[in-house]
Length: 314
Ligand code: ADP
Ligand code: TRP
Image (tube, rainbow, N blue to C red):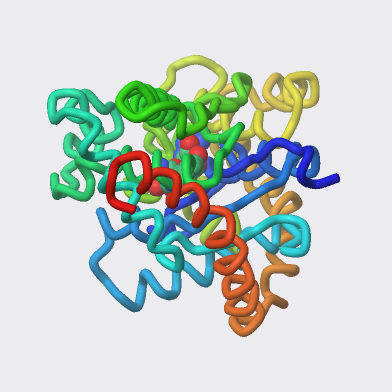
C-alpha cells in the first residue's frame, strides 16, 4: 500500500527555537496531509551551519526540533524523521548539483540576498544553500514539498538543477513540486518583517507563558487605525475572521488589550502541545533519529547510485 503513495518531504533548520511562523507556514500544512503520502521530515543541520557556529547549540537545537516534531503529533512509525548529516548522500549530491548551476544564477536567490541584507555572513555555504536543499529533495524522488512562501524560489532552483542535470545525463532525477498554503503566506514577526529564527523577531511555538507574553508585548503597532495589523495577522492564525470581528470591534484602538487577548489565545493553543513536548526524552529522540537515518539511507542510496553512474563516477 505505502509504495503506491507519492512521497512528501520537508525540513527545518535547527538554527534556533521553532516559532509559530514555522508551525503555521510548514509544520501544520505538513501534518494535515502527511497521511496521504509516504512522508519524510528532515532536520537540516548542515543548512543550519550556514548561520550557526556553536556546537552545543547545534546539538541541542537538533534534539529540540525533533521533540517539536513529536510534540505536534508526528508519529515516527508513520513518518521517517531523520537528520541530514546522518546521510552523507546529501553532501555528495549537493556538490554534483553545484556543478550544474552558475554563480550568477545563485546570486539571484532572494533568500541569500535577504539574509546578507540582514547582516548574516555571506559564507559559501549560504551561497550554495539552494543546491544542498535540492539534493535533500531529489535524493528521495520526492513528489511534493510543503514549505512556506519564502521557500518557493528554492523549489524553482531545484527544478532548474533537475532540468540541467537531466538534459546533460538523461532522465535520472524526478521533478518535485512545492505545496504552499496561500492563505498562510509569510507570517510577520514582532517587527512586522518575516518571522524568522535568524531575525530575533519570533513568537516561540513552545515558549513559556512569560516568553510568549514578552514577545507579544513587543509586537510593533505603528498602524494608525483601530486594528493593529501585526497583532491581527498573528491572531488570524488561531481564529477565524468571524470570531475575531467582534473582539477587534469591542477593543478598537486598545492595542494593549488586544495583545492580552492574543496571549491568552496563544497559551490555549500551545499549552497542551508544550506539556506533551516536556514528556519527551532525549533518549527517545536519539532512537528516532537512528531509525530514521537507516530508512533515509536505504532510499537515497539507489538514487545516488544512478546519479553516479550517469555522470561517470560509478
Ligand atoms: P527561519 O526563517 O525561522 O530560520 P526556516 O528558514 O528554517 O525558518 O524555515 C522553516 C520552514 O518554516 C520553511 O518551510 C519556511 O517557509 C517556514 N517559515 C519560516 N518562517 C515563516 C514565516 N514567517 N511565515 C511562513 N512560513 C515560514
Ligand atoms: N531551506 C528550508 C528552510 O529554510 C529548510 C530545508 C532544507 C528544506 N532542506 C529542505 C525544506 C528540503 C524542504 C525540503 O526552511
